[in-house]
Amino acid sequence: MKLPLQTIYRDCPRSEALETLIGVEAAKLEHFYARIVSCRVLVEQPHRHRRSGAPFHVRIELAVPGEELVISHEPSLRARLLGEEVPRIDKSAEVDAERKNAERAVRDAFRKAARRLQAYVRRKSGV
Image (spheres, rainbow, N blue to C red):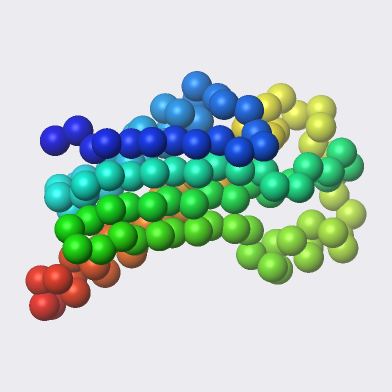
């Protein structure tokens, strides 16, 4: 069954590479549970700063029979603090540095979604 997928971008440009990654990661979720009703993915970059850039936030809403699983992935507080306190190498010269950060955030969010989905399946099966 093809998983109904909706992707929304807020305050960041749409990317074919990111679209493809989201499609691949969403398809992997079907291996854990084939009865997923829908999947909505929101990718946003809320506060853009010229100097250091902003971390990407990813929210995944999985509709499953009788429930909706919401996974919200934001960089940890420790990562944010380290990013501000420790002198960083300027990555603006790196090709597609911003895209790599978005891909990392999407992968991390889908890893969380897989764990939540597996917990849902275990809870429903009574294991």
